[in-house]
Each structure stands twice: as structure tokens, then as C-alpha cells.
Amino acid sequence: MKMTLRWFGKEVDSVTLKQIRQIPGVKGVITTLYDIPAGEAWTRERVKDLKDQIKEYGLELSGIESVNIHDAIKVGLPERDKYIENYIKTLEVLGTENIDLVCYNFMPVFDWTRSDLAKLREDGSTVLSYDQEIIDQIDPTKIFEQMDAKSNGYLLPGWEPERMEKIKELFDMYREIDEEKLFENLKYFLEAIIPTCEKYNIKMAIHPDDPAWSVFGLPRIVLNKENLLRLTQMVNSPCNGITLCTGSLGSNPHNDIPDIIRSLQGKVHFAHVRNLRHLGKGKFDEAAHLSSDGSLDMFEIMKALHDIDFKGPARPDHGRAIWDEVSMPGYGLYDRALGATYLNGIWEAIQKMS
Ligand code: DNO
Image (cartoon, rainbow, N blue to C red; front, side, top):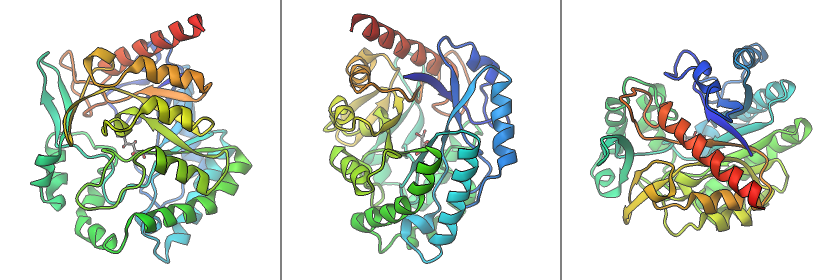
């Protein structure tokens, strides 16, 4: 395992590379070109520049999160081939620059969804939280304004305003799309891009849907062990793998995460490790990384990653907002640094005891 931190770039992030470098054991960052819309090809100059900025601080660019997928690909529109071609061009650029990990998701319309971005906890910190009853009362075309109002002025990953302006159009696009169709379109996409990934040894790591169930009646497929096995087997290549996101999969208490990790040995290319508290059906608060602060057992999760000989990048995920830090919700420095340190401690203990 290689410990990393997500960084949104110097124009966007409140956290600096200088700060990230000072977290013990963090060797690299996971980042993206935040300003390039889904569907456009990335240029080699931009990727090189990003790599150089990171190298200057003694860190490496350990992977891209995300190269987003244009909705035409998810819906399977005729123009998808043009966008797939651009995706391949981006992969070629990344491959030429020796970047070997790409995280992406296949969620219709919305990326991750929350009902509150700053829920006050008993310790005075705030966390992201989800309550299906609240979501059910929200007009999906209005949810962007609600998320945006509590974003501390930061652009939220996956909630780009240009996309949200077209939200009604987006919902219409998905009207005929069910889970099977989404699987089919994912297969079509993977079949087209995997030969390029194999050529450059780029590992594709699909991110689970967050939360791990259908939201606003839209189909979702990256939800559980069965579907993860299906999608990794339907295009069988070592490059076709997953991001093991404990917070997303863990939103559903029926998902046994250590079992999912062991079942997907060889397919886990990237790990997002965080904790949450189950509060009842369809309801959870995010938590500190510490096992006892939430419902997930971080030791068992790290142990399972160790058992499958996981060598890829891992990163702490959403943290609480603590010590008066103002940042993009979930992506402050302090609680993620605590998370990285805690996870590194578990890893060291497992290594020394095995
Ligand atoms: C939210 C993130 C997601 C994730 C994408 C991957 O905080 O976990 O936005 O990066 O779904 O494509």
C-alpha cells in the first residue's frame, strides 16, 4: 500500500502540497485537471505541468481521480464514440507520462450525494451526512443549489455548475436507461478503452456509487459485491478494476467490505478508506477514521487489503471539519491527516505482526 492524499490543484484546494508533504508517510497525491469538462481530451502539456508542480514538493502524482465520463457514453448515444475517442486520447497522454491509475465513476447525473454537508456532531466538528427521508423531499433539479449553499464557496467534485444548469436535460437523457442498459454501456466503454490501458499499463478503477443505492429514481450499478464481480469479469483484463471506497460501499450495512476486498483480489487498484456511522435505514453520518467512531472496522478493512497483497495507492477519504478549518466539505487537511496517520499505524502493526 502507498499512502496518498487527494489534492484538487493549486487554484482550487485550500490544502497546499507543502502541507501534504509534511504528513508522515504520505508519498503522493491523487489529483485531476479540474477545469477540463468531461468528454474533452487532455493535453500532454497540462499533464506534464501538473506532474512537475507535484514533483517540486517531493511528492509523486500517484493517480488521477477522476477522468470523468461524458453522459453520452453512460446513456449510449450515437455520439458516444467521439467522446470515447477523446477518452482514449487522454489515456494515451497519461500513459506517455507514466501515470498508471485512473479512477472514474459511472453514476447517472449526480456523482456522490449528501443531504447535509455540515452536520454538527457532539464533539463540535461537522460532517457530511445522508438521510433518505430528507432527500425524498428534495426536488432533484434543485439539489445543486442546496449543496452549493453549504460548500464553503468551493466547487464540489462531481457537482460542476455547468452540468447542473442542464439538470432537467440530463434527467430526460436517462429516462429510458435501466440497470441492464447501464451495464451494457459500461461494457461498450470498457471494451473500447481497455486495449489502450493494456498498452500503457493503466489501471482503470471504477468508483462505487455513493450512496450505494438508487437515488432520485436513477439507475445505479456499482453497488455491491455481485455487481463489482460482474463488471470486472465482463471485460476481463487486469486493467479493469475498482476503487475500493469503504464509505460508498459501507453506506449499505449489508455490504461486507473485508469480504468484498478478498473476493476482488487482483482487481482492487485504489483504496479510499474512511468511516461512517449507520443511523438507520438510508441514514448515515460520516465519521472520524477511528473504528470506534463509526460503524466500520478499519482494522479488518486494512487487514483484508494486506491479505490480498494490495500494493496500490490508498488515501484517507472525507474527514470531519475540525479545529476551525474552512475547506471543501470533507477535504480539509487536519482530519484527513489524522486519518492517514491512523491508517498507516494500522498497516505498520499488521506488517510487523504477520
Ligand atoms: C467524493 C468522491 C467522488 C469520486 C468520484 C470518482 O468525494 O469520492 O467524487 O471522486 O465518484 O469518479
